[in-house]
Image 1 (cartoon, rainbow, N blue to C red):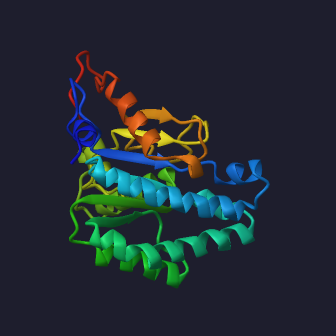
Image 2: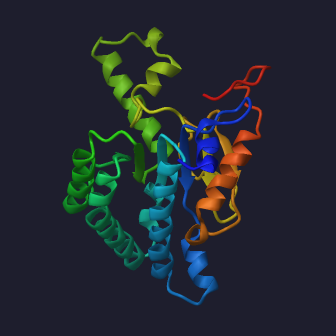
Length: 252
């Protein structure tokens, strides 16, 4: 691995490089509008940025990369745009899955599966099953995802356990609820990046982001590149992470 990549992966000083990076990929439509192009072209260029970012994350030693690909609220967009987005998802999985698998990337999907188009659901299942044993990088795809909805699903599962007598209400803790979230085995994100200059989480990983560092990038997602990812990581490593305490801790 080149020296620059080693320094990012291993960390320098008191704050280690992030194990888990999550990205809100925002600004495809505005990128297209600024160039007089249809919104669909912005989404297509956004897929190219996603491919490059997945490659960069693997090279930089990031263990988990979570992407906000389609939110629960995105269904309110115009039907033509939704069809275009679903088409891009189909093509991404069909065209890129073999390369992801050969590169050692494991695909995980979080979000509500119930009610999805059977073809889309089948593609998501296929991506997870084919890459199940890969260990180089875990790519978490947040699809049909909303954090409030995820927390509500977890609360319902806990309520079922309590009603069945398998869990005492007095024993329900934050750790209990966390164990019923969509991917409880994964570390919480150390760093969350949002492109396009917007500065909010938009119902993304609200529970998991309790102590995440947030970096907001002015560029629209189709313009996001490896240098911007490295800059966000450098900014992360310049932060003092105390996790509610007084002394900084070296990573999570």
